[in-house]
Amino acid sequence: MRNSLQFFWPQILCFILLTFQYEVETKSTIEACNASDSCTSLLSYVLPWDSKVSQIATRFHVNVSDILASNSLFPITSSSAHQILRAKTLVKIPIFCSCVDGIRRSMSTTYTVHAADTAASISEAYGGLVSIEQINIANSINGTNPLTSGDTLVIPLPCTCFNNVNNGETAVYMSYVVQRRESLSSIASKFGTTFSDLETVNGFWEATVDPGDILSVPIAACSSATLKWYDESMIVPNGSYTLTASKCIKCSCEPMDITMRCVPSGLDVPCYNLRCKQSNLIIGNECVEHSQTACNLIQCVYRGHRGGKILSSMKNSSYLQCPDNLCHSGASCWAFSSYPEDPFGMSPKSSPSLPLPVSKASLSASNGRLGQFLINVLQIFLFLKFILIF
Ligand SMILES: *[C@@H]1O[C@H](CO)[C@@H](O)[C@H](O)[C@H]1NC(C)=O
Ligand SMILES: *[C@@H]1O[C@H](CO)[C@@H](O)[C@H](O)[C@H]1NC(C)=O
Ligand SMILES: *[C@@H]1O[C@H](CO)[C@@H](O)[C@H](O)[C@H]1NC(C)=O
Ligand SMILES: *[C@@H]1O[C@H](CO)[C@@H](O)[C@H](O)[C@H]1NC(C)=O
Ligand SMILES: *[C@@H]1O[C@H](CO)[C@@H](O)[C@H](O)[C@H]1NC(C)=O
Image (tube, rainbow, N blue to C red; front, side):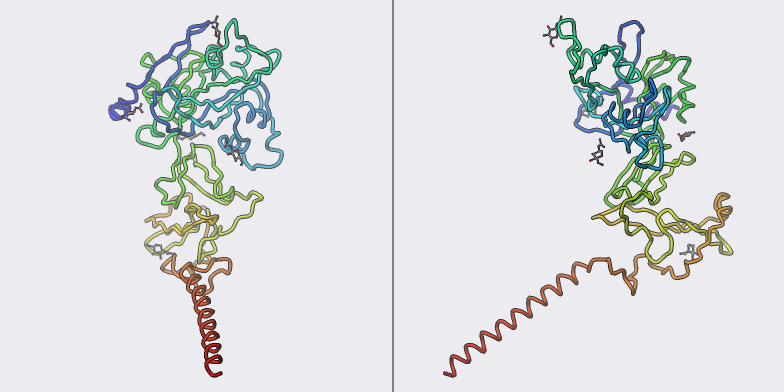
């Protein structure tokens, strides 16, 4: 606890606890910022009424596929967008969190006013993530400039980044509207965090929260930073996935141990190079090889993508004893005997789809040009000789 406090001390200093004065006094955690940097964050949106995924996407100006991914809804089919989610369902909305006038804020959502709308009904439509007062201030609405049907309003939404770190671990922050009969501890257990973490992140020293308060909840996340990927970095919150490499690869953050697991998405898009070189394993496959002294787990793992090509490599981890979950899998490395010592060694029968190595390609091109040059010189020489003879 002392460590985490020390770690957070600079952040705590930046906190401003804003209180808004209307019927209920609500608290909201604000992160000061002074740069043009941004991050991806989440909104926890409790559906005010039954809504299609596509309607939620439109309400927040977010892609349908991103909503499906953040909520671990798979597969993606042509009917996914029409799927109806029931009122009171908690939907995680991924939003782009930027720095506006010195505080973290998401300003990418707009709303077109309908005839019967009031600032209160719009606040309700957004699940209390934006207050009546914030709608009025952001859009200069007052007695002389009332809400008018057809107007396009900016909906400022709460978000925080805190460097995507919580207690030294990768995290994504989610703005959460406290519901009736909830406490810091019930919210903490709901999202796999702790009471003291919530207290520290939000600076609520009194440790009481009221319905309507907006908390910043750290969600553990998987990061590609330690996975030695080429040209790609990614943060995936616990219990969600991200599609990458032109939607060919689906990387999810496993809730059990917060590890990134990347497998072919199986979506109807053209995908190549899904197989690890010199093996029969495709990305995400693994097999177990028992020796007298050890249990070797051999995996084909995703390593990023470059120039339209998916990269992968074999990973061999040795265990003294097979971890329980592996022994039950019964996987065997039936095709593994041809696996060479050097996983990047040249294969005698390289795939015809591979482009010629650059050096070889330019060499043959220049050979061609040299040949043409020599033929031209010979022709001129013969021509001169012809003239001289006569
Ligand atoms: C603001 O910028 C200064 C210097 O550029 C930096 O030291 C400070 O940490 C920044 N503050 C925040 C809240 O980002
Ligand atoms: C939504 O998807 C389209 C196409 O896939 C992409 O170009 C666009 O950047 C996405 N928008 C957001 C907000 O992610
Ligand atoms: C209402 O807002 C407008 C700007 O949109 C401003 O000119 C006007 O003075 C405001 N009126 C009141 C009563 O605050
Ligand atoms: C990950 O999320 C699940 C629920 O989806 C939760 O039970 C678990 O505690 C979370 N893990 C961590 C480390 O936060
Ligand atoms: C994996 O590693 C172990 C120990 O380092 C070795 O004995 C085994 O042959 C390796 N397996 C493969 C397929 O490379």
